[in-house]
Length: 416
Image 1 (cartoon, rainbow, N blue to C red):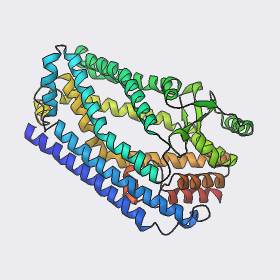
Image 2 (tube, rainbow, N blue to C red):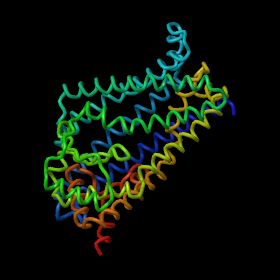
Image 3 (spheres, rainbow, N blue to C red):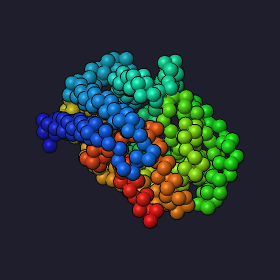
Image 4 (cartoon, rainbow, N blue to C red):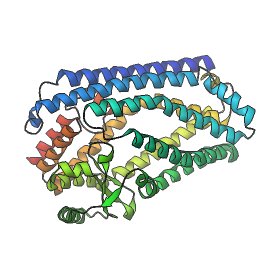
């Protein structure tokens, strides 16, 4: 392959993926607006027409932001590659840094920071304009700045050593470098699963032990029935930033924690909370988390093997507008263009994720009434202003959860 052909392939993938995502977003927007005046039958008892219309408008507003973000990111990718920004940065850094690894760390770090900065205005707009308009935002400017500062510091503390070690492995462990780098990334991801809930998450939110004794007792009975061991039940002050509600598991082994947003506990009955929890337990019962981790490891293994091939070919660098061949530019370019390829297998990944959600719902119905899970989901759709009528093609590409109508329909069949 020559550099011109590879450059054309890159441009084709960039334009095609961006155009496809914009097209899908437009379809999603049109679907939400088209059905905004009619609440689907299964939802009429809980969701009022004004809430359904609000969800459609919220979906439309988020979609427009998403389209802007897609175009900005595509332009940014073009500018830093074929536009020559990586070459310019390399020239500047080489004048001040003589160590190849440190120069590589600086290059990758600067690109990461630039990417975050161009996304910042849209993030601010979504939080303080869109979410504020629809009544979801609880964030203040001071809290936003505080979060941004803490996120930046934590990211730098974690990312800089990781990039340094990765580049050292890249350049010092011979032909098997990619295997050792895969081992390092795999260990790092597992360690982060253990470290995040204990040391990082508390920097941003308070996690207090559940004080509702009646609910806690009911949850402990459910956990015992399901054979699930937990390190504790915690309530997170999600209302500090948003009115959206959620619940999740974190950690692994016996150190698994169950976390409920305070906003979720305020809106659902005890039985509905148990149904939501049973759904999450279903993911663990079916080993969905372990399977996803395994899939991540497999994808990274194949990816690094491919990178081992690409890094020795000049057309890989020159075809992307980069004149300096180095371990850092090889790793950076591979990370930058990987999403263009992975985008077209996204429907497969989304389908598998939706399958997992159906399995978790079925599991929940073994331990809690299907009607409780149904009611809890409808309330969450309502309170989070989630569209009940997503576009089918958009959903196939993006949605990790089944469309509302399909999911509720499956629960209705569980009741029979």
